[in-house]
Length: 234
Image (tube, rainbow, N blue to C red; front, side):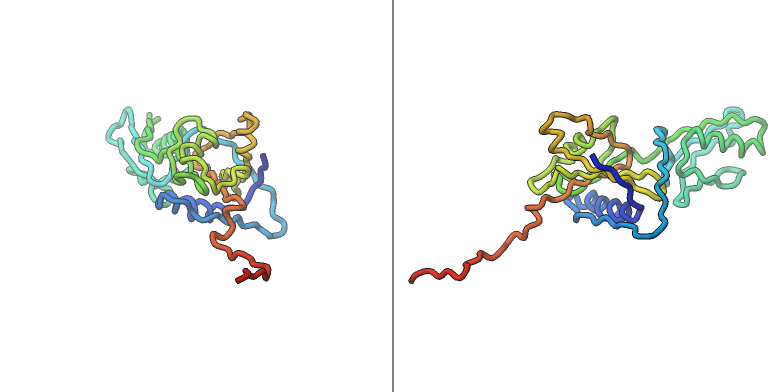
């Protein structure tokens, strides 16, 4: 298994164009192009530790309940800029924060108005965890990530590989920070042949799997037959 990191330019090409269009159209998308960064003095990526708690995103909705002062109870939605509008205090940026983190922020903010406020935050509506399967698959698209799912299992969910796939070089794209995307290469054929799934990685929300075309599938569908100057005898 090989692993490397690329900048979000590749992420924008792969996720926004290839994967999303495949999910919307229900068919295979074009093979993505991975851009390289030739800038000098680029530092190594700083990998963010994986946080198992859900982090709020744009469009999510939360219920905020006050045990002693229920008149402040409210239901708010994360706006496109990542903020929520709250009663009697300034807007708060909650995008990327977990429910415990938001609860702590609100206790501090409302502590300026109320005496030791007791606040409960409940996630009411949110984007379900998902993964994207793209490339030479039976049904490429965006799928809900339910429980523990490996790359091979995800490929099966997406309809399995087809005759054009190069399953010796399956790519797993994973965002590891705001500046870097980690790319891991998996040899699914070797796993199957050896019956060893130790390198069959578990997916995380937002991961994208890409199965490229094999060499033979890239040959033109119609080619002329060479005659080498040989003529038939009339």
